[in-house]
Length: 96
Image (tube, rainbow, N blue to C red; front, side):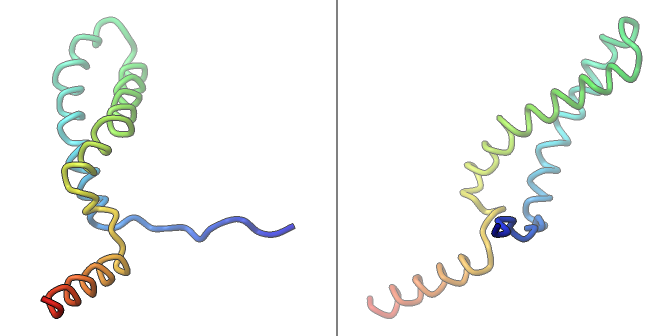
């Protein structure tokens, strides 16, 4: 049986920055708007769990894809693709 596992790919500072940019506004809205509304109705742990579920769903299916689109994939570019893109640009400039 072959080992089909791939090595762990560690996130970059760019991915961390975009994640923070997505987490901060959603977290603020949830803590300032939703938590006070639910404070008398549910236990604190339930409110935290609801906030976490909304935050994960918003990040996974709305914010991170939108941020990826807006930044044109800036956060997930690897050094090799940047290097290859740089080589292509220099070749185009040389041929012009």
